[in-house]
Image (cartoon, rainbow, N blue to C red; front, side, top):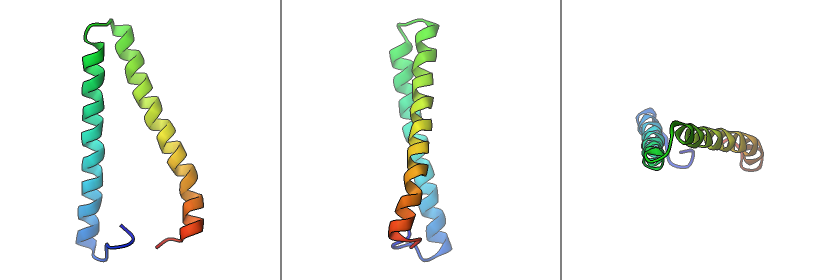
Length: 77
């Protein structure tokens, strides 16, 4: 966004598009979990859901960790 967004309306559109992508991917992952857990017991469904949430948390931590070094190397723009 920092390279081509110069207007507030375009920034809002890009943020909305990013949020939409996150929501779509979350729905797809949840549907895969439902498919995999359909034949299994309740315990397996809980484990799959925990793995999904743990993966999202680890991804968030890794991106937060590296965002500082990227900001330092490339600057805010």
